[in-house]
Length: 243
Image (cartoon, rainbow, N blue to C red; front, side):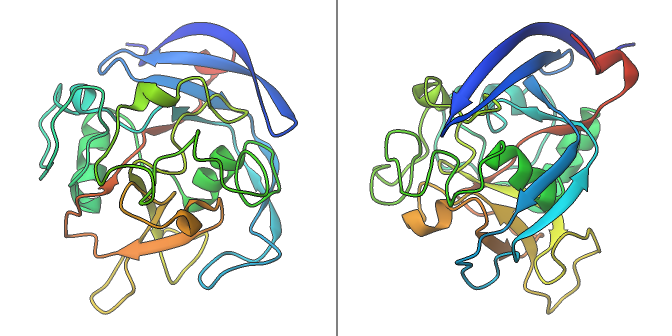
C-alpha cells in the first residue's frame, strides 16, 4: 500500500528565497508533508553560539517533512505516550520523550530527522540567522516573550511559512532530532552522562535567541518536557518523487 497520496505543487517565498514544493498526504495520519529536494545545503552560522554547528556545506538526499509539527489530533490517531499539559486538536503534541516520539513515528512508518535535515528544512535555502532573515520576526514564531506561556494553534502562522512552506519550524514547540548533542550530524545512541538528544527550533517557553536556525538544544531522551514535541520526516521513494 502506498503510504502517501500526492497533493498540489505550490510555490512559497520567504527572505528572498522561493521554492516550488511538491506536497503529499500521509494516508494513515493525514499529516501533510512537503518534499525537500536533495542537494547541497549551507548549515551553521558564522557568528555561532555555543553548541551550534560551524558553517559548512553538506549533501542531503531528498526527504519529506511535515508542514506542521505533529498535531494532537494526528498523534491521537495512534497509540502514544505523552504528558501534554494543554489540550487542543490543532495544538502541537508536546510532553513527549525522544523515545516516545521515535516509537510513535515508527508505528506510522515515519521517522525523526537528522539535525542536518532539520536545519536544512528550517532554513529552506536561507543562510541568515533565521528563516525569515537576520532579525527576529514575532509574527512568524511563538517564543517566551510572545506566547503567553503555552503552545499555540499551528494554523495561526499558516500565512508565515518558510520558503519550503513549513510552519512553526522555529518556535511553538522544540522538535526532537535523531542525533546526540555531542555528536553533531551523526545519529549515535545516547548514553547516560551524555548531554542528551538534540532538539531544534526553540519553543513557546524558550527565549527568542533559541529560534536561530543553527541553535542546538539537548535533553534526556527518556524524559518528557512540556515544550518539546516532534515533526514527522520520511525518506523519498520513487512513487513520491513527483506529485
